[in-house]
Image (cartoon, rainbow, N blue to C red):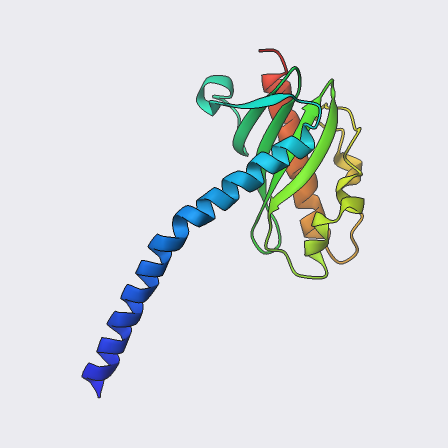
Length: 172
C-alpha cells in the first residue's frame, strides 16, 4: 500500500512539473501583454514607449519600483508594488506634464468584495489629474469602507511612483 501511494505522489509531482513547464511561457507572455496594455492606458498620449534600465536611472531609489517606461513624445510610466492586506498590489502609474495621467492595477490578491474593489475605476480615477509631486496623494488614502489597508497600499504605491518621477523626470 505504501509503495502504491509513493508511486502516486511521484507521478503527481512529475505531472505538476510538466504542467508548470508548459504553462510558464504562456503566463509570462500574458503578464507582458498586460503590462504593455497598462502602459498604453496610463500614457494614452504616447506614440511609443520604451523600457528604462532601472540601474542607470534610479540607483538610489528605495521601495519596490519594478519598471520604468518612457513615452514619446512625453510621459513616464512606473510599475510599482506595495504590500496590501493579502499580498502585493502591483500598479502601473502614468505621469505626464506634471500630473498623474492614469493608474492601473496589474496584480492584486485582496479580499473579493472588499479590498479587491481597488480595481474599480471610481477608486482609481481619484488619482488622475493630481500633481506629480511627492505628498500629493496623502489625502486620497481613505475611500473604501472595509478596505483601509488595500486603499492605503494603493496610495503608497502611487506615492512611490511620484517619488520615482521626482528622481527620473520626463527628460530624455
